[in-house]
Length: 258
Image (cartoon, rainbow, N blue to C red; front, side, top):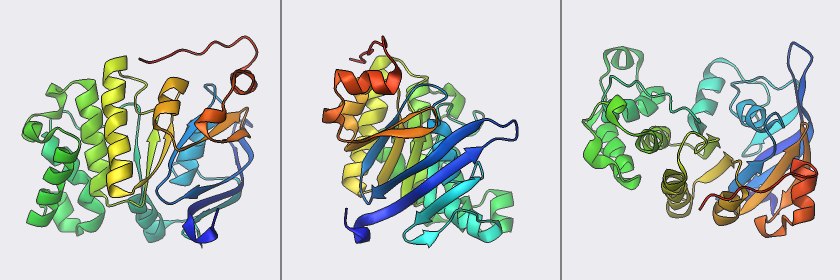
């Protein structure tokens, strides 16, 4: 991988929680600009911890993280705010304010670029409003802009969360189990929109997923964690039955999402 193409570099990353649990044990990998990188592994393998260390919802306890060649392993104050703008995140549970409109929820992604008084009063520029509507259109939910978020289905709410993240104008989008709460048909709708964003906007996406059938359909590259350690780094096509057992354990059976 050409070093000029690398947007994110993870070196010997470690995370030990106060209770002594070591969630990440010297994890190292690079992420190329424009990749759709999927992270797989059993529950408790360190997938969510990895993403949360990248955007500093959790503080790493060892190793190094670089974004565009800049060390972001330990950032605070204004640097942390800028990092959270550059590295947006969506979650399994959509974290929307259900009583607010879809548009207002999406506009909160622009708060990091809004002055304090405007943020407190909920004032946004015409440019931000237009951008929010464009992203709602991109994820196929613009007609719902003036609905309360709580009126939407789970899949629709997740698409609102994606539009909100895009309004931050990030360089990387982290998606932590974005379809785990959704039914199979809705899974593909959300994943299709993420792939479209990846391809049309060239946005780098790092996504945690459980189902290998989704991984094979959407990922450009896969890394696998087991017990906090990196055990696979390669193409989805290279995950054979032998690799599947190494990642998920002997006797594990693959579940398909059609």
